[in-house]
Length: 572
Image: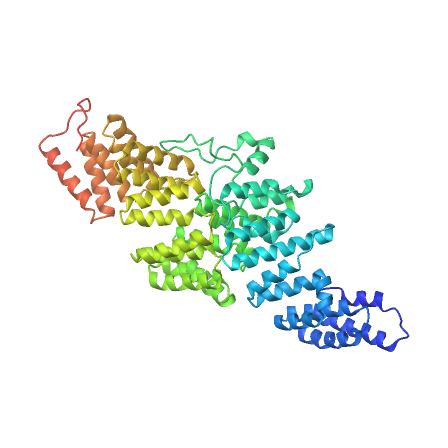
C-alpha cells in the first residue's frame, strides 16, 4: 500500500487545529485498514477524509487514497465517478490518470480506455515520468491485445520496454508468447539496455525464446565461459546425420541457471524458463523433471503449469494429469490453465468431445492462451472434424502472429486429407517463421515423399533429424522409407541404418520393425526379414503389409530364393 499516514503527518503539521488532528487520525486508520486488506473499512474512513480536506491543498492525496481503496476493492466504476468529480486533479496527476485507465480496462471499456490514454499522454521528462510513460504504453498494449489488434499491441509493448527495459509485464508478453517471430524476440532481448550487474535478466528471458534454433544470447555467454568447448553440442547424435553443430547452441543444458546469481539457481522463474526450453527442444522427460521440482516447492505456480501439463501429455501420464486438473480447477476455477488441464486429461483418455469442451472454455476465459487454442484444434482433428480444426488453428494464427505452430498444424491437417499443395503452402509458411523447427522439416519431407520427390524428401528429413536435439522415432522411419524409394544399394543400406535408429528410439515400434524387415528383404536377407516381420506382427497383429511381406518372404525362402550376398540387389 501507499504510505498514507506519513504523507499527511508531514503536510498537516498544525497540531493545534482539531480538523488537522482528525484528518491525521483518519488517515492512520485508512493506512492501517489498507495494510490489513480491510478495504471496506479503508473506504469508510477515506471517504470522510476527502470531504474534510476537499478545500485544502491536501485533497490530491486524499482523493488518490480513496480511489486506490475503491480500486483494490474492485469498485472500478466508483473510481471513475470519483475522478470525474475531481477532473482538474485527474488531468494533472499521472497517478490518478493511471487509476482511471486501469479502471476502464477492468470494466472492459476498451475503446474509451484507449481514447483516455491518447488524450492524457504526456512526454517523459525525467526518470519518474519515463517509468510512468512506460506503464501507459504497457496499458495501451494490453488493451490492443484484448481487442485482438496484435500489431498495435506489439508496437506499444516495444515502446514500453524502450522507455523502461525493466518493464517485466511488457517483456513477459513479448518473449515466449508467440506474438513475435523468434528472430524478433532475439533482437528485442539484444536491444535491452540493462545495468552490467543485471545481465542475468537477459538470460532469464532468453531461455524462454520460442521454438528451437540458434540462441545468440546463450551462445555469447557460452563463448565467454572458460569451459564452453567442453559442453558438447545439443544437436550431435548417432543418427544418419549428426553434423548439427553449426545450428545448435553449445550452452549447458542447464541454461539459464549458470548465468544467474547463485541464490536464484533454484528460483521458480529460473526453473520455469529452463523447463520451457527443454519442452521446446522436445525433451519432455527433462521438462517434467525440472517443472516437477518447481511444483514441489510451489504447487500453484501458474506460470509453469502449461509446460508441465503438456510434458505429462507427451509422456502419457494420465493419472498425474487427472490429479493436477482436479486440484487446479478447484483452486483456480477462473483461470484458463485449470480448464486446459482438464481438457488435457480427456484428450489423453481419447474422450475428444469432452476435451474440446474444456479447451474451448480455457480459450474463452483467456483468449491470449496459445496452448488452449492449439489443443482445441487438436481435439477437433482427432474427431476427424477437419473444418473446425482448421478454424481453431486459423484463429490461433491470427492471435499469435509470431507462432509457427498454427501454420504447422494447418499444414498437417491438409496433409492428412491429402491436399498436398495447400499442405506445402502452409508448412512453408511455418518454416519461414521458424526455419530450424524439426517438426516442420519432417512434415515437409513427408509432403515431398507423397509428391514422389524422394531426393528432396531425404534432404528435408535429414535436416529434421539434424535440427532436433532428441529426434523422434517417426523422423527415422520416414527417412528410411524415403531412402528405400531411391532404389539404390546405398539408399537401402542407409534406410536399414535409419530403421535401426528408429528401433533404438522405440523398441516397441512395429513400424520400425516392418521397415527394417523390408530393408533386409530387399537385400535378400530373408531369415532376418522373416524374424523382423514376426516381431512386428507380435506388436501389431492387424498390420496387413507386414503379414503380406511375411508370406512373400516365407514363400521365397521355401523355394530357396535366398540370393547370395554378392548377387545384384533385387527391388520388390
